[in-house]
Image (cartoon, rainbow, N blue to C red; front, side):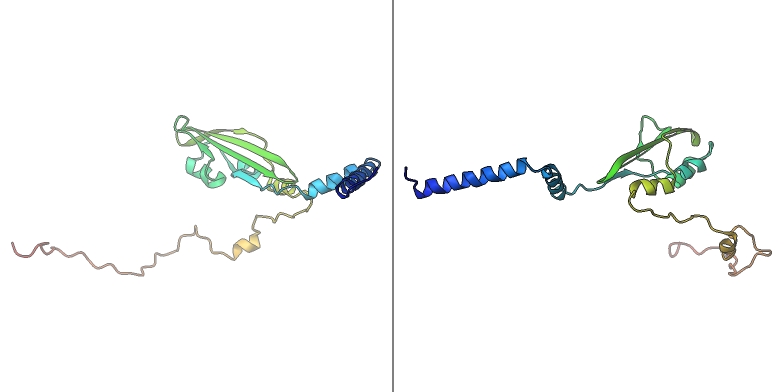
Length: 185
């Protein structure tokens, strides 16, 4: 039997493929190698952050009877408000990052008129716990957010009233009569 050029090339390719397949089937690290290659070829998954994070410290600062403005100053603008439920604000926060387990938190504030009446929701993490959850590989020290008495002493107390009122501008007395708006009457 005589092999032509194209038949010889096809036979050679088949033999090479069979040899590669046989060597890979016998290799115990095939799964590890393919897993590493798949991880290297994984597409980038962007971070998805929605809503506004509410910490345990912020929730603890809320008191029944606070106005809507005070609640908004502490928690920020709610993610969900409804015309049909004007007495309810929902704060929802979700975080999806590559390499970190997805996180979702929900907090609902209820109002009676303009006053905060109750709070319902998930157990919120502290700011330090949240930072540790989103950066498990790197231990990040969260700075202390309270000023010491020595630091506060450097700033003047804005609540103190001056002993005597200081008049800086003298306001002229109002004229007895005003000129007419239009010329000649």
